[in-house]
Length: 220
Length: 240
Image 1: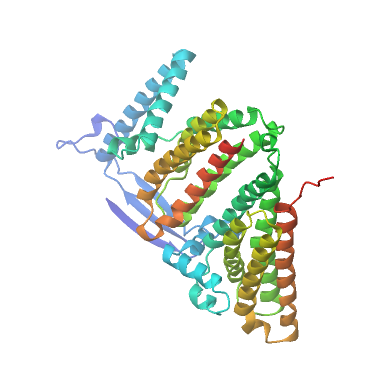
Image 2 (image 1 turned 180 degrees about the horizontal axis):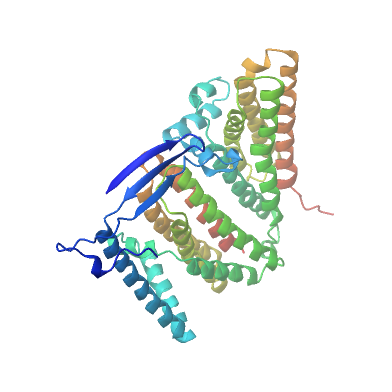
């Protein structure tokens, strides 16, 4: 492989010439053709399956990721699963939480609460992730939003418990338990990606985020 | 798609005999900086270059407000982490604590109506105090009054000056009028003294610079009046 460079002062660019070994190029071109053909086959097969099969497959993937996120055993399998982020799971849990809280009995501002929870979850996840990135964490943006969204699931359970039970101290105990579960899972994921001296700075917003949501689940 | 030669062009060793393709590559120089540097994420990365030890020292500086040590603590490295998360914590405490304080006074606890407007008002009030007002004051100080402190230094200082309110507002949940006024007044004193002491070098320079002290004091007083009369107002049931 040969490379010559000339500086072109006129338009501030450098022109170079690369000589490639055509044999190598041919093999690479063939390999590229083969990969394209494989993806063609995959695309056409998912287009032809029934809606029920697609939905079930997506739900199963959401279930698998949920188990990875909420049973915090940080094995390498978990980490690999979480790298295939999706936003369907967070959307489902966010809508479930907003609906549960807006429909519960003792308030007359259901639509306001729905909007508040929805906006709070998405903007909150966005700001917490941005904070972790600005602190120098090597965290992929949507992967982090995905994990934060999946960790909202225990707070969903907490909101359902508050609907079912009416004894206040029992509700408080259950919601505190759900808050600790959410926070422990989210913190377990995030703390691996932030350098040691800035860990608390990145984790405190996560705790505040779930505290806000748990408080809403408790009082409504 | 370029033709890299067919099998007929092979020589006895199997190498292709057609002319080797020459691909011209143009290297562009580094991408030009965007037209709006303040809008990019990279611009703000330098304001998050602190560690948890630094945040602890800065909060401690702000709580011991009579010592003019804040500029030393900051050491030319103003941060935005402190202002952002201290103000968000205060919003949570105002929302939760304000309603809790009303709940403790309420006689009819079963039919207590949560006031959700507290959150929207808290967001508006606290973010205005922590960001909008210091940016305006900082711009005035830097460009009109020619101070050495940048806009973000002032934002950082204002953000940490609010840290005392985290403790004050938790204590204000206690539903006694006198106790609430006492805590709010001590918070006001601490916060205002912190700002004035650390800006004293700049304020004492000239008469216009002295005028800056007035809006600082006025906005702080307005803040605690809003705290008291909106979030922690005590409405006692009147016995006839």
